[in-house]
Image 1 (cartoon, one colour):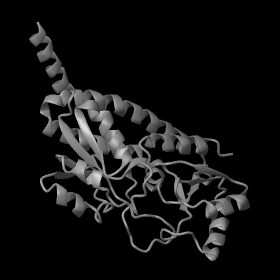
Image 2 (cartoon, one colour; image 1 turned 30 degrees about the vertical axis):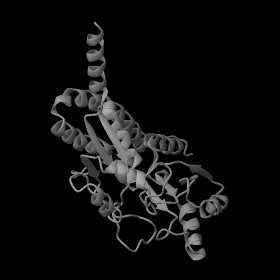
Image 3 (tube, helix red, strand yellow; image 1 turned 180 degrees about the vertical axis):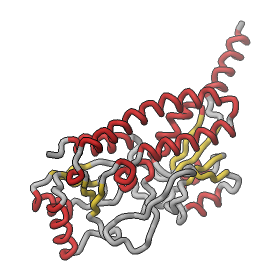
Image 4 (cartoon, one colour; image 1 turned 120 degrees about the vertical axis):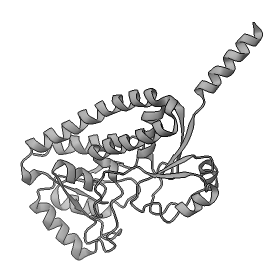
Length: 278
């Protein structure tokens, strides 16, 4: 009897152990992957919560975790191009797969950006998220066919939630007149949200920096013309310009974090704020 319980315990441990180790760049992608794989996969996130991907430097612990990954999902935006060689250096066998197949990229809109860099904030559009989930699902089922039904069930559950929230955004967009569909952000994080749901994003940041006084005056005039009532900023970004513009407009400054694990929360805050536009 003792041996029976020992075998049963070992079997339970094996069933609970992750089948795949998968790496992603950012927290939002970890959230999507977690909703699909739950305890069946171990997730390695390259950029820790609260870190700025633009200034990120991988730590030894992250490199060690990445060395165990079988799959790495990249978003093809080039965001990881500077530090990906270091990760590949500790894991040359990892399968590097694109999660963005089927998504149309846009250039960053950050007030006369000079580099024509691709906008990496794919997940702020729930339409993009649905495409990403389909790509992730296909890969997980390919590398872990025994978990196919498990992944598919989780996929369907999460998709229902995303479609419901996406429908809410589309409903709001249809109700608002065109002159009330413009919103202002410091960092150009919501370009795909604006594109896919019929809004317009105005960006304060100029080439990754605070705007010059001349540009600031132009932004204030543009914001007045667009009747901006709220300005959205992200944690770890300067508030100075946003607060100066908000003071000129008698507008609110709203903090949200689209880079967080719970990225849907930022979308919901944006949706709720836009729904109160007078």
